[in-house]
Length: 234
Image (cartoon, rainbow, N blue to C red; front, side):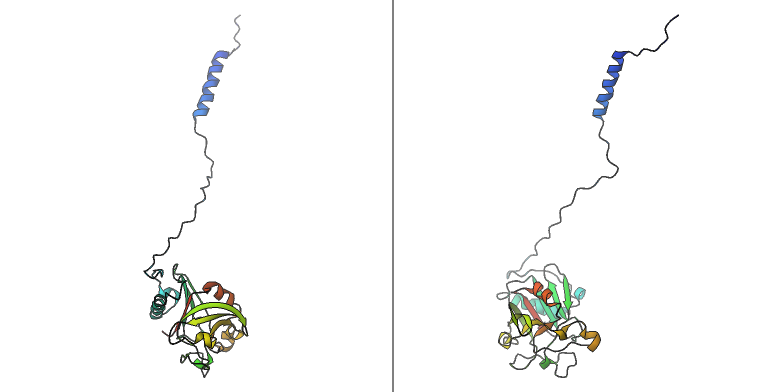
């Protein structure tokens, strides 16, 4: 009787196995179900073009950060006018003394990026004799205790009767006594935010730009030395 037991051909099996191996090598590797994208490098921000004086040229949207357009134009014009004195022209501060002291009227503008912020600032008692909260007049006179109008250059820091303070140099005929009058940036309790809900207005300085006690470091950090503060009414 014939033996019907299946005996595989070893040579055929070897050829078949080799074919399977070659096919596996030729096949593309399977992709994972979730494939992570490579990290992207941050996009470089191009430098702003500059005018002949070196001032960054940009279009700032005054409405976006609540600065009166006419006042903004005057501030930027002053920045250009005083380019010989104001070496750092990438950031400026504008004080809109049209607004009452209950409004955050000290505007910080990044001229290059267009970013902005604002906070409360007091005016001088000589500018508001009746303490109405509104600035009525400017003065550059000694002993006036009034706020002055014009462009100021931020100067050095010191510690005085109001603690940490920053000197200001007046660049215009309307404020050129600022340094001698000791018109500076400093903090004061009467410029704190809680004055508004309790009194409806800030207290008054002797002509200095007084800000809240917890805001002074932010002001110093933003302005530094050699930048412009422009104070006026719209």
